[in-house]
Amino acid sequence: MQESGETSGTYNGMSSDNIKGLVLALSSSFFIGASFIVKKKGLKKAGSSGVRAVVVGEIANFAAYAFAPAILVTPLGAVSIIISATLAHIILRERLHIFGILGCILCVVGSITIVLHAPQERQIQSVAEVWDLATEPGFLAYAVLVLLVVFFLMVNYVPQYGQTHVMVYIGICSLVGSLSVMGVKALGIALKLTFSGMNQLAYPQTWVFAFVVALDTFNTAVVSPIYYVMFTTFTIVASVIMFKDWAGQNGSQIVTEMCGFVTILAGTFLLHKTKDMTGSPSFSFPRTPKHSNMEEFDLEGAPLVNLELTHTS
Amino acid sequence: MQESGETSGTYNGMSSDNIKGLVLALSSSFFIGASFIVKKKGLKKAGSSGVRAVVVGEIANFAAYAFAPAILVTPLGAVSIIISATLAHIILRERLHIFGILGCILCVVGSITIVLHAPQERQIQSVAEVWDLATEPGFLAYAVLVLLVVFFLMVNYVPQYGQTHVMVYIGICSLVGSLSVMGVKALGIALKLTFSGMNQLAYPQTWVFAFVVALDTFNTAVVSPIYYVMFTTFTIVASVIMFKDWAGQNGSQIVTEMCGFVTILAGTFLLHKTKDMTGSPSFSFPRTPKHSNMEEFDLEGAPLVNLELTHTS
Image (cartoon, rainbow over all chains, first blue to last red; front, side, top):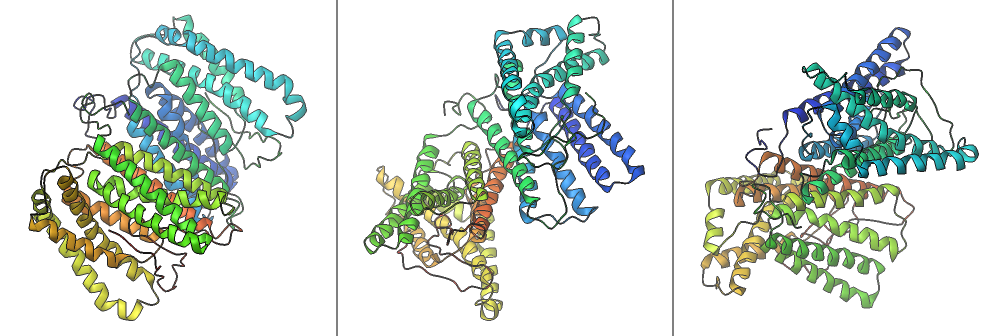
């Protein structure tokens, strides 16, 4: 992208950090999309390489958050859906409905739009700075609100509807996920700074963030485009509040990002619905970004499926 | 849109001319979308008001080209599809498939993206200036190429395939349409300047453009999303060559416009395909932008349908 940020006023080109984040997020999606196909092929030998691909993918995803804003990284998880669909078409010879192809195109077009208009990653010098961001009243209010809603759902809905209405779990996972991804990002930044010579491991804050990330591993399960939508939406909200992604952006850029996001959502929706329309045995979503490992899944009342794939980050 | 062009370097906000063009294009789409429903209701009384709505819509469309770049006005024709689908849903109680709703959302999102990133309308002081643009080597080459291809199609394909392969006619109409829309724009600019006190009617160029527009009325027919795609694409190409719409834009903005355009195309495609999937008797496209009055239409081999609605501009 030759249009650099310097010459074009408030209009942002792609910073080198954003490009790193982009490449990492895309390779993450490639590995996780591919792992799904490997897994589907069901070969015993391939099984372990499938797990390996997921591990590599999750590490790349983790690293991507260290370089680029969540608003750029998270929606790109949709790319793994495209990779998976394309590989299923080529390797497994699954027929892709014309709407599925349309869904892929929309995911690509929406991703390009978001990538071109994503904000610059905030320049951070120390994990203490991230801690300050996380403890500002705005984000604390969001975190408390999320935890209250989760608590409310767990007490009032999980016992009665947990087994029949998967939306309850999806809601809980998405909400908690939006917090733990902020932990992932904070830890990623701490490690990035440490590797570049500014040791952050002495800060207690680094270990608090590591603890949040450890909690995040409980959030492995499942699921579906609905989860993708909710998780991505809540993560963007959390990131906008905590990292103030939109502070340097004008209304036009923010609206454009939202348009790109809606386009991706439409694409994933289309791809998901498509699987009911082909003759192919099962095209399903390989993963929602980061929180992955989903299995084909019927939203109406099916129990949660938890794959045995290991889950990093 | 408070982010004005002045403060943000090369990043363009919406100029007041672009906003005028936008409002005109949207009201054009509203009238033409509504006229389609009126016509469909099939009431004798409503018939004439349907024609009136089309006339008003076409006039608004004509005026829109006088204020804003074709790259902004032309794709917004998709909005008439949404208006028509929505009114069909409300008034005719036609059920809209979920993919149809998705198609509408995509048209809206793609339109917003294009509107936000459309180039500024070139400031023109006289119709002689437009004439200079139209007679530059680049655009002349495009015009000659278009006419050669049209001639080739008419000699070699129309006699044999004209009745069976509607794509031949769609191709011809789209190509000629992209030239005549430039005439529409030139005449619109001439009239706009005349109304603002700079009489352009003394220039012979104005009358040449008026002649091109008169030819344009032969281009009324038909058709379909394919026509929409081809017509819009060729019009954008013609406008980019003649009016150099992209001269003041950076790569990121151009790519964003293209993404918005692809999103709209996906939306129209989805809306079109949807009509095969609902129980509704017939949801079809009310019109492609400007060249309008299409009837439900099967691309595979159906003859061209020419409505009796009058066609302005």
